Image 1: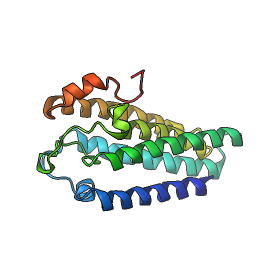
Image 2 (image 1 turned 90 degrees about the vertical axis):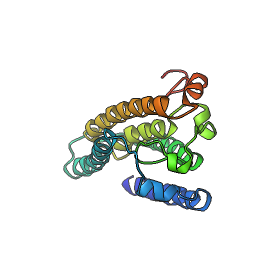
Image 3 (image 1 turned 180 degrees about the horizontal axis):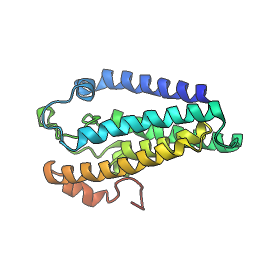
Length: 193
């Protein structure tokens, strides 16, 4: 199952990068080298999020190696794989749709930052996070590790906090975001939150 997971992760990552490179001039540069105005609170949160993602994978690998978790039923792992694919697809759809999608929080005035309300942004204000949360929580189950859920749970809490902080930044600094937030009431889960 780990090989299926890696193949999906690499395949969708390459596909979305190629789509972004062909349709969104400047977006890859922004993702890898953001400009001025990065929020001071975001760099540590982004670093911790990357670390927790890595810890999730390492914990799952160690769990498989040493057999800490009970064997999970194949049906449970396949259901988690479907949830992973759905979450990963939602995140990639958000990245391809939003030309201001970045790994770091900043108002991209140098790139003419505006509100994006197309694609998955018609349903929730932060579909990239929503998809990432779903994929992140499904990952340990796909990999057969209950212990990796500890790191994935910590990552989930961190991303929920980061989403709230980013949402506040957009409300305060991005023209038109208040009106968008009135139309699209939910940050992460349509009809719930």
